[in-house]
Amino acid sequence: MEIRLLENDKENRKLSFTLKGSTTVFANLLRRYMIEKVPTMAIEDVEFKENTCILYDEILAHRLGLIPLTADLKSYNMISKCKCKGKGCNRCTLKLTLKADKPGYAYASSIKSKDPKVKPVYPNMPVAKLLKNQEIELSATAVLGQGCDHVKFSPGFVFYNYKPNIIVNNKSSKFEEFKNSYPPQIFDKKGQIDRNLINTPNLVDACDGLCDDIVKVEHDNTSFIFYIESWGQLSCKEMAVTSMDMFKQDLEEFENLLKKD
Image (cartoon, rainbow, N blue to C red; front, side, top):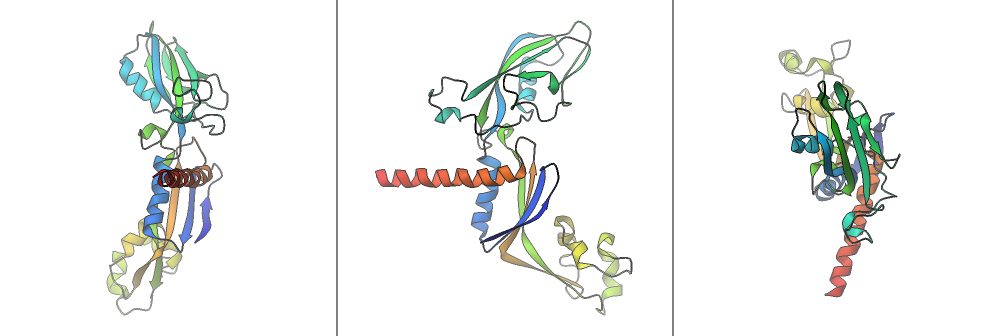
């Protein structure tokens, strides 16, 4: 198996890499572990002291739960695996507060955390709009969770494609007949189809099957191109590495269960 980095933006929010010498089963397992098994922090419980804005308590609590929080996986445990046995301690829960009483928008930046490492990823995300004499005061509890339990814990979006092998024949006798059927983005300044301009997730499918004599797309079912987009709680690299750590833990747990039987 071989992994090669293709692209990683400066903010660590988008990443792509190739996975060679693998199978669809493992590729899909990797995708699902990154989306569903990598833990992140999110607000789980909300206690309202005052809420006179237009939003009901339930709607406001739901909105708070969907605000991405920076994750500190080394300092916190999953409640189910914490030594407090689910009672809720500083190792598995985090208290946050929000108080807003001025007209205008209350933003995520108004959420105050007892842990400076865990805070809203996007401070300018609106929570609610207050009118004159309206007020919000609440306390919330954030915990580590997994996307398989609730999507608010999912760290990002992940998908993959088979790695395409693209063959271009600009000298085809059918070129003039079919050239207008292809996306204009794949043509260079000389009016020729550029293979490198096709090799993106959107344009490969747009060119496949139009005329194999001009553009032929073949797929290698042992090579995959992964695309990761983080919501901001973790970097894309942390998502990928942590997913493999979680997979290893599950394998060890499965092995121990087999030994007991």
